[in-house]
Length: 467
Image 1 (cartoon, rainbow, N blue to C red):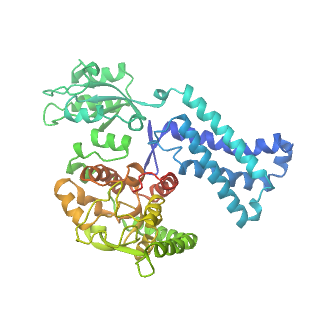
Image 2: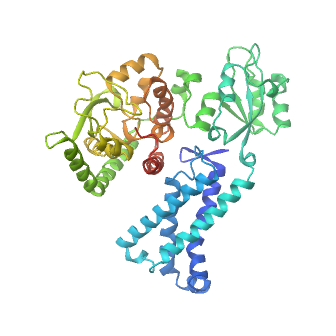
Image 3: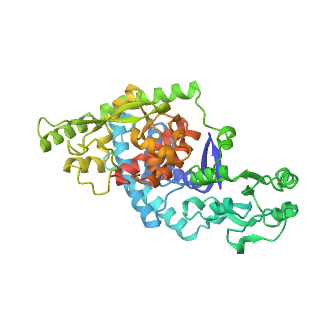
């Protein structure tokens, strides 16, 4: 089941899990102080002003790290063992963050060895919870029971959702065939009742929501029946909005222009643009201060491999906001003569044009760091659709509907498509990524940008989708 908070869809079961685990993370240092160091609960409460900031900061560090490693991501496909490995990496990252915070803020500084013990206890708590959840929790208890009105081509797009992550929030209890439709879904799930019995069927099946997936709404549209269902407490939603909410992307196969016109979202208000620009500037300056030694080492490595006269940076024309071209800046990861014939090519999995240094900096995303200066200049944002080359944009705009709409937002160094879909190097990949880009353009907010930046940590650390 999905809930909407600050204009973002959250999975209810994951939200409850995150809240419960946050409480356990806070209890980890408390338990460690009592069991390992022999302090009493009364002593901790008496000296709360000394211990509470440390406990809260530790909880924040672990919580952010677990989120960054995808432990609360509804699109996470890893099983219990994979989740535990991610939790282990997250706790190592949290320990580093807590130590860094304690270095700058002495009041947060734990005793020698104390931080390690806290982290160990927290990891034990999270391991127990994840193992129990994987073995015992019935996910259907948190799923929204859905009745689909329609059984034809549009309804088929819902029945064909194969990924476990896409079906995490709902359970399709049945399909009702609309007048004149050919049945293209599982016939075992097609209900024999007609539209006039819609309210009773919804009541008998304990339906939470009805999804309108008729192929042709100009035929006998059950207005009266749907109105009765809505007034009796059953939610009614159209197919495009339902798929958008559940899958985190806008499905092009069922999309029509009227949905874009009337749907909530796709805003470009001044306040949002101002806050986004302010965030970009602050984050860019902070990242430059943190990564300048790494960028300097990368420059030296490129010079060492290709010679002192070899260029360090690579400038390439990309399409930005409102379709305007700009020069994208990256560390050069390919040979100088990679495109000596002037023809643009998709990057391949084993591209022989990539240098040895280039292969490494691509794997860990270091080649993207110079784009910070594109952000400072205002050509890009930290989060947004990935900018494409003009040659590819022209080609893709002719073959993929709504492709130009992705240019309604500034392109980004990272984005929703980058963390949800692997590296795209074909027209088919571009179509898939466009669906995520349109979701971002429709739902972008400061909170969403922060969530994407946090989840980018997992992409970088695990090398997901690098090429």
